[in-house]
Image (tube, rainbow, N blue to C red; front, side, top):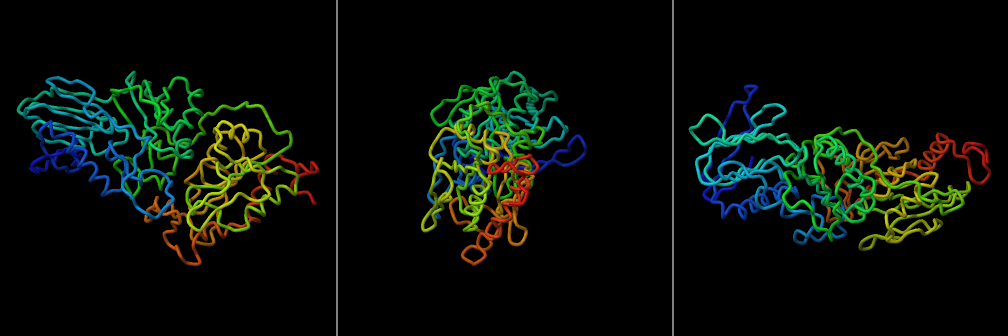
Length: 482
């Protein structure tokens, strides 16, 4: 546990747990209340800087918290994050004798003047996870993910605690913060946040980007959606707050398991302590069909070069094949051209241009009536999952565990692959050309260069056969002789 101090008087305590084990040793530091908030922020910023963890400090964000969005190798100062909602500066719950506490970004206890013994427990196991003697000041849990905390506070010398409170979220105000603007992350985490609200029967507010709030709000009427950055959170004094995110460099402060070991989406289940099995969140379906002909939707863009299909002729070959069997091919990326420096990625020449900064619901409507979707490990592929379309997903920098399951996941095992999910590698959000092992060599991005057009077409044919999709050109099976 962490506890800020103005005088660096550290004492170490070891306490027997209910099982006779030793809890984690933690330093205890005391401070005056008027100094506490500023010093707590400074201490947390330092902790986040060492670990590369954005939400160790609830008042600031490090770029390493979010999925790739950087397009430069320049490393400026920490950018402002419009999607990050700071927790209240003072605990929101009133305890006896002037003690304040809550569970916003972990367990928090603010103590008035006195001589106190504080104990934080895991109520599910009865393990004592931290204990100390302290004067006035703060006690903060190190762990920021869901733990069923029990807070106990004694006046030193007395046998019964003056505060004995176990976390109980039922009918409480709870915020779940989605502190990124990226599509795929929020889509992937959404189901787990809904499960959390349903499990605990709490009054729940989701704060997230406006474009995703517009997609989900009508589908989950029992949850308050606050669109950011323009909206203002409704719960000003929440009982508890939980923050979604991908926390890098092996952090287990904000997530119980490194997300690279469990998958981009399933990590939210572990952060919130709910069933980690995947399930696509609900979006508005039943949209009218606007294109008469049969078509396929593709998305070819992403936020860093490692995520692209870096086989120079792959997309052209796939689009050519789809058109040869009678499909219209619609490219629905936001941008027709993206890149950085001397590398620019353009939509396939023979695809129809449906790009543009359109509402996500328009893209969902197009996906809904497509025969299938072909894309990368990026946001639109996650939306296609919500639209209940068969998906051919092409990726080499991730392992298949990173994304939701599709039987048409395309990768190559003939070269380097899976750097994103390698716990020995740390993604660089500021390097658009990140390739941790082979950058500036002839092996750079071989993870997707070795995925060929023929290989992707093979998955397409299998998808069509599995789903009884005939060739639009002649109504014959895809494996019938041409």
